Length: 131
Length: 232
Image 1 (cartoon, helix red, strand yellow):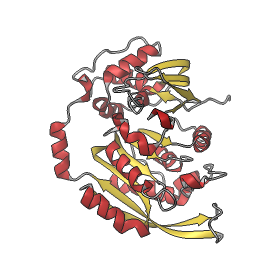
Image 2 (spheres, chains in turn red, blue):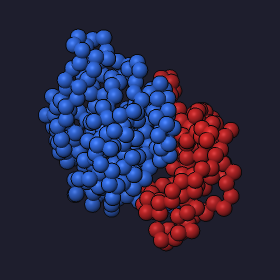
Image 3 (cartoon, each protein chain N blue to C red):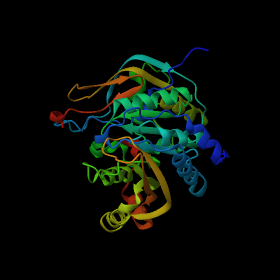
């Protein structure tokens, strides 16, 4: 068996990351994604979990992120019956948890500042003069 | 409900890799497998706040607590830490254990409050923050405040603190922040000699597992003012 790199950044985490911690950046959201390595790996589908997460997320940022990662079949909007809409939940599960970035950068939409993703870990640390 | 036994969970955590060279300024010391297992077990079985839940591990270090939560079948766990070396060990542990539902973010937890998108996203926050008793006084409360911000209105924060700081923490949480706090358990840590400033071979310390939640009346207020995020 070959060694698979399991750790990665997914769109669930991307949904919460902002760059408005940078001095002068007001919104800094959603962050651009420049991926040099995108991977899709199957994960157990947990409809209850995904259903509970949907209202906490900003769906337009999921759509934007998914497109930046070259995904098609991205539902533009959350259907009103999302909690029981299995087809939607499966798509959301895939986009949020299964499509992942191992190497690349997150990019502040206002300043262009790059946050590197290395080995699946996004580095959001700022230098002192940036805050 | 996950039915893993406490001993099995602890045994599983025994071979989680820990800090080789802990950094004193970050007050790094690992959470022992015993403490981590007891803590996560209590949260899972007494409160049902692990299984299928969205969990944050603040100052995750080598990932002991987050890995324990993943073992108890949490939905998703996000670990946050400032230190690259700790995250590298954590990453190794996750790969070794083939854990797929934990993610890591490198950031300064005490400055994250400025990134408000994390607010009210997690059902449960678990953490073993710096005790804030070295040169970084107050860090423990900064972690706690950040943890509270990140939990949903019905969520809970579980955090380890020195028993000697209990009165102070209770006062701040209850009086200044107007939140509910309970001491869930008193635990006993044996801190092996890791830092040069420890004179004895090991130091016994007593820690509280505290639980912080938002009171009912605050919750209902929040629900009225909170707009749904989907359309924003």
